[in-house]
Length: 242
Image (cartoon, rainbow, N blue to C red):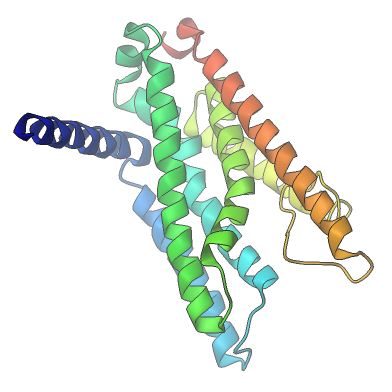
């Protein structure tokens, strides 16, 4: 029994060290600025609504309110991950061990998603308490669909560009293009920022639910394809280490 407890404690210690080490690499010393920016945006919008007399916000409003901080939190680690590895001279280590880089980056992406999910869940919980809404978990999970897709897309783009600033520029351009086209595809299953809580007046709830399900399936498939493409790009050692 004691041997089992020691083994569990040892495994837990290794997991904690692994998470702490990868957090230092993928977030560097700049993630705190994005976290502060996300908190400021959230608090600013909430404060403005409360002071202006809008003591209630609907689920569709909170969805958008959580989406923006989520993008800020997901943005830096996924766009600058490869760049941070290069700056810390850890790319050579990753490419020096066969297939090791795939496991490392899968773990890192999982850490990013779990961390962002946890932060957004706390914000959703606060929003539910402030505006007497319900289901912070449902809100958070729905917001994570587009965020995971954007994160996987940013990771894939970073394996092509291999530069944090370049990847960030491309992602900003893509984001602006999606935002500009948003009005035309607002009710479409192809809208990345599809709001599952914003039921249009000219559409029945079953019809809107069907579109939402298609949208989430497309986002899941897109996330998997971007992730696999990025991992395949990591095979090209000479393009990363020169």
